[in-house]
Structures are given as C-alpha cells and as structure tokens.
Amino acid sequence: MKKYFFNFFVLLIFVYPSTVVAQTETEQTNTRLLTAWQKMIPRYAKMQFAGGMGLLSAGIGWNYGHNKNWETEVLWGFVPSFSDDRTKITMTLRENYVPWSVRFGKRWSLQPLSCGIYVNTIFDGNLWVKEPIKYPNGYYWFSTKIRTHIHLGQRISFYDKKITHRTMSLFYELSTCDLYILNAFSNRYIRISNILNLSFGFRIQLI
Image (cartoon, rainbow, N blue to C red):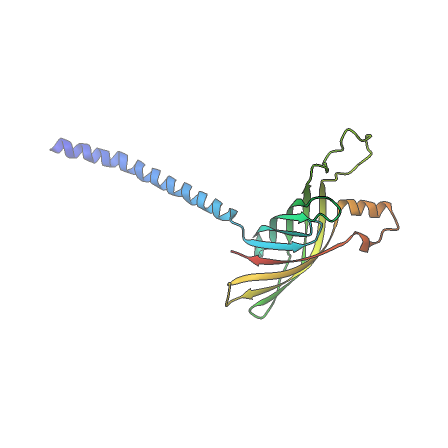
C-alpha cells in the first residue's frame, strides 16, 4: 500500500505539471487562432457607383490603426454590355486613409477627407497585362487589363441607434487612373475635368 501511494505521488509530481503545461499551451494556441480569425472578419460592407470599377461594385473592408483611419477593401463589380456583346466582371483592391473625423452631436459625423489608391482589373480574355506577340514591340506600352487609380473624397456618417445600431455613411469620390494622367502630361489640350471620374456610394459598419 505504501508503495502504491509512493508511485501515485511520483506520478502526480511529474505527470500532472506537464499535463497542465500542455493544456495551457493548447489554450494559448486556440486563443491566438481565435484572435487571428476575428481579425479576418470583415468590419464593414460597401456599395459604390462608378469610379472606374464598373457601373456598380460592392464588397467588404477592414478598418484598423489609430482611430480606425486605415482601410483595406475588396470589391467586385460589373460593366454592362453597352458597347460589347457581354457583361464583364471587375475586381478591385483598395487602400484608403481617413485622417480625421468631425462629430456633430451624438449621431452625425463628417470625414472631410478620404484618400487612397486602388488597383482594378477586368475579367475578359480580350484584355491583357503584357502586350501580345501579335503586335509590334512597343505598339501598346500599357496594360489593357489593369488600371491603378488614386482618389480623394468626403463622407458623412450617421449612427442608427434605434434600428440597426450601425454606423452608416454616404460618400463621394473624385478619381483618376494612371493612363489618364500620362495622357494629360503628353497632351496639353486635355483638361483636369477630362481625366476625373465622379463616384458615390454607401457604407455600413458591421463590427
């Protein structure tokens, strides 16, 4: 009986601590995985009209940083068959920066400046990133499939306390793309108004 208790005591001393450590490490790993997964959950949804991303586009985004003033977005849109035989799908990756926000009462706020950069592509087999070999070298010096844009705009936001408990925003943007800017530098007859696109949209904070 004494030998049994001695063996049990030894087992308790050496096995139990290792079991506790293993459980603690497992819990820490699960916590890290949960935190990583929570960071991947989209923070807001967005819908935008025009802006060089198609007639209408919609997607999700994540805001982070000090006062949540940095934003990363992924949007999908479409170009109707106005001048072609089929509708085209677009995809856009955006990075936005909102320096500050001005509050008006408990529910309203104004973001006087939002700015950023985004890259857009159209899913169409007739468009290309690299010039096809059927054209003379240097005939097309730009990609017809990918455009890089810059934008400036403003937002007004409203916190819906009674219905959704979400912050909703209306915004507008002025944007232009790399090809327009290069054409403006090479052609003195092109005005600023000829290379700017006006877009507007709606945004709702989910988390």
